[in-house]
Length: 375
Ligand code: ZN
Image (cartoon, rainbow, N blue to C red; front, side, top):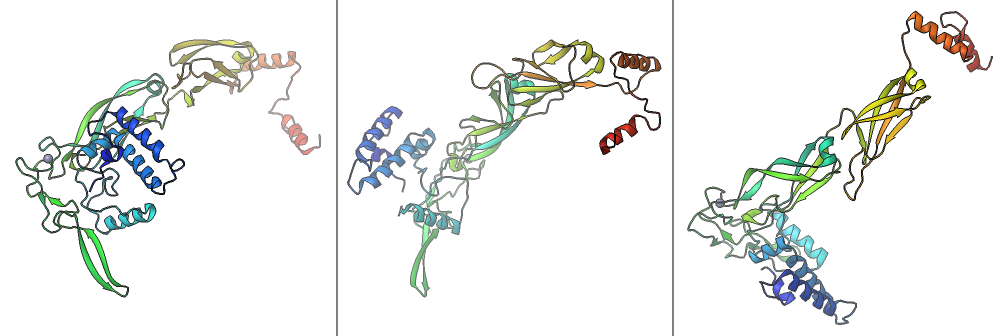
């Protein structure tokens, strides 16, 4: 049987969240094992905490009001009739918590599972936020029977095999003597009731799978892998139980220009050797539009320019990351004869003459000698 959580806290069934909290605090102070030396206080304290855990959570409280027990070992999850696992799980719970809770029938109404959905977004959308339309495939409450699972005008009936207990006992003679074991009633799957006339729409499950269209508001500055929680948009539970939450997991599509590191953006721009030497002005496309940046004369290969505040807005707090422009200084690979002549002249004027590569025993042999230490 479901525990009387309202009774444990001494509150009325229509109490407000605030009244429940006050009652819990008063009792917790009274029965806290550090304060109350009575040996039974510890047990009572655990009970109070469990009751508060249930009644302070709107979803769990809703289950209690529907006659369920969210803390019952088989009260949650999406498992179906579990056969031996049903008993096994109960035994594990007993071993861990030392409870000898009444087994009884398991509730038909159970909370639904959370659902997760992947949402692919462009950098611009993760940076500045977006209202994204999504399609969600989950179980929703059956509108034909409103979750009851029964055909119109019919009701569940007490199971004739277990008389509503939800379990059947069997006695086995073993070398230890007689062993009485209980297992879920197979006639009613442990519910204690059967549905002789199930709802034709949902087959008695109280829920149906359907596709819904929702809009999820993505805040600016989200990152790849983050999850947005949409409360109670997950799976409706068996018997029309309260829905779980929907998590929308964000996946940022790779951008063809920028790579993102936290809230900073990085891009590479190739500039000719001459521009690096003489200085130039670049027009960079940022997330916000075009921006001109100066490349100083004498810029070295692998230099980086930083454009402050042109990265991704911070998710928490004000401000934005920066945009880093990594410069690749390109050396010309093919020179016209006239260009080569000018470059040689330039080298000579700086005292940087180089041997012509085509000559045998020129530059290459000197370099080899240098590496071998014979120079
Ligand atoms: Zn139905």
